[in-house]
Amino acid sequence: NAGVTQTPKFRVLKTGQSMTLLCAQDMNHEYMYWYRQDPGMGLRLIHYSVGEGTTAKGEVPDGYNVSRLKKQNFLLGLESAAPSQTSVYFCASSYSVGNTEAFFGQGTRLTVV
Amino acid sequence: AQSVTQLDSQVPVFEEAPVELRCNYSSSVSVYLFWYVQYPNQGLQLLLKYLSGSTLVESINGFEAEFNKSQTSFHLRKPSVHISDTAEYFCAVIRMDSSYKLIFGSGTRLLVRP
Image (tube, each protein chain N blue to C red):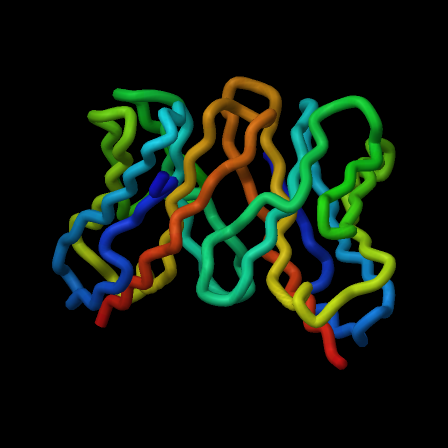
């Protein structure tokens, strides 16, 4: 079982470029989340999904878009990258709310120059 | 609004000493509570969780946390830490309303010294 897989693991972007981060899970989980982790700020929720075809905004959604066309995949898009989006991005998934743990990917380190 | 506050950004402690990592939350509805641990260059792993029932929950590696509804706290404790416990610890909540957002605190770095 691969669990939660994020691609790519590292990326350097120039300001204004676009990119998509892919999160794939093979555990048939309903819930998927995208977070960014910055020093001293913990993990902040960007967007999340409670099932295939659904998405919702988290705490810091501006500058990001997401899609959940297939249950196993949750894509995070940056349309026009900014230096403020330099961060480590984590994807997580869980089978249901609360009574099961969230499984995390290994993270994507993104630098915007 | 929902928030999670971890009062200490870093806690240095000597090996075999006890430790407490503090977590407070604010929510107008019932919540589920969690502690996650992150080792260097890795994703987060669940340490323990409180859903209902006994307010004291334990993990397999000696950590425990107690849910205190009146103080809206969920502090993490261990009576004797090891060098291998050095990591960052995150408190998290899920609101039991329609939002189902998993929200994390800012984290506490536990640094265990020999």
